[in-house]
Amino acid sequence: MKKVIIINGSPREGGNSDAIAELAAKELKARGVQAEVFRIREHEIKNCIGCDTCKTTDKCVHEDDVPELVKKATEYDGVLFVSPIYFGAAPGPFKTLVDRFYVLFNPNKAPTKPCEKRKCGVVLTYGNMPDAEAEKAARLFGLCGSVAGLGSSMTVLCGRAREKEAFANNPANQEKVKELTDWIVE
Ligand SMILES: Cc1cc2nc3c(=O)[nH]c(=O)nc-3n(C[C@H](O)[C@H](O)[C@H](O)COP(=O)(O)O)c2cc1C
Image (cartoon, rainbow, N blue to C red; front, side, top):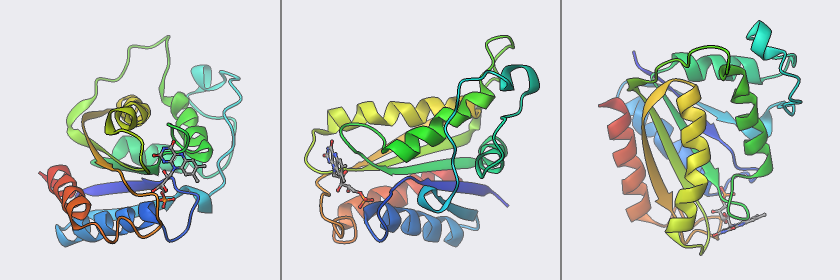
């Protein structure tokens, strides 16, 4: 059975990212995938302190909810990042989580070759900023996916979504998320 972890970075409960993550989980499960949602706001995620201990031990000094998540991100068939855009970038708590993926990057070792079959999906929700600007925010997650060994990536942009119910009321964006789940299980 394929396994996918959906990382939902929204600090807001019941908004667009929650609706996107729920729809993606439902669609993946309907295709026989084991889909889990990790809501950042429900977890303890400490800041990377740049101590570089992980460069000699391959282990982070922090004991919180991140090491288990990072392990899943390196082992599962797919990771789906779902996030709002705050001031042109990922919300602070999501960036904090991404920084912790530094444990997988070691300049003293040959990088792990990303596996083409392992998929990295990115879904971003935002207000009225131009899509081209939102694309720039997606790069962070692509980079995070590649250090986790995910070799293929696809981004879905769900803009014009300032209101909490925007995604729930937008069948075209829902269709794009369903297409993304099709691509993940391909
Ligand atoms: C602190 C903050 C900053 C935001 N910055 C932007 C922005 O730079 N560009 C944009 O188009 N929308 C911005 N928005 C709107 C959100 O991205 C949008 O409402 C999104 O759909 C929220 O997702 P959620 O419902 O999952 O929380 C911002 C919202 C907040 C609360």
